[in-house]
Length: 368
Ligand code: ADE
Image (cartoon, rainbow, N blue to C red; front, side):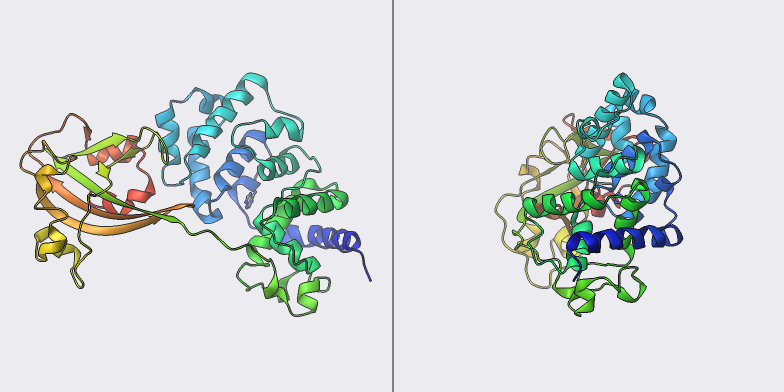
């Protein structure tokens, strides 16, 4: 019987033979320049390849080198990042660009890891892809393919398990560090798919994979129980006056530094009447629901002081973050005066200059 190291060694060779003919042609694979690899790896943290593809190209057109990014304003960076979510990454990327600009490119894993926004996985990926270092990058995808390969029932959420797999990979890391690192990612993304749906007939490891050989692919990876998300209710106001819309900047916490429609935690409000439509909410066809937006309108803090508050539309929307879920009810309302607590800007200005997070997308549709 083969040892785990022997299996991994054989798997590494098979992966390197498979990868060149099966790699997707992704824009960040056109060169292995440190700065561009850094940009792609930060963008790809928690974000799907499809969503990153076009944004990556546009971002690099705007900030082609660390110098342009280092010297940009925060608002410019946020605007270029708009819609990608997890905006702390954008701030970190700019910080990292400033470090590169001031100090030059790091040459070791430790140097890479010191850059803002770079954790163990990203440091491994950048080191392998841009620096040719034998430093594994192990995330949930890599753990999935390796636990299947070895039919390993360890709980993959345990940091000790990640560490063990990192060390096992390090032992067999080939000289073709970039192809090996990308090959592992590629296998996880295109063949060894999550949720018990791997495409084993296309897999270069199908003669080697212990889970496949015993028909137990679906048993791996073993995961710990997930914690439930916290639900937060939010009332969102798209206020319009003289062809402009009210925005304000989020001062801290989640989505800090981005622009939002005025909103607040709603006061206690009766649950929606069954069967009430969004239109009912706006027009008061259902008395209970409409009280959320109409009867109290003059006294709702955000709309307070907005003479002539008149609701044009209303709807509910939901946005799911990693640890929080926003359940929103929003209205489009005309007001007679521009409340000075907000900035008032046209739809065109919002589109060009103001980064409004996708959490508010359902309500941005009213802005045109
Ligand atoms: N996910 C994280 N880094 C990646 C990369 N370089 N290519 C594809 N998917 C990725």
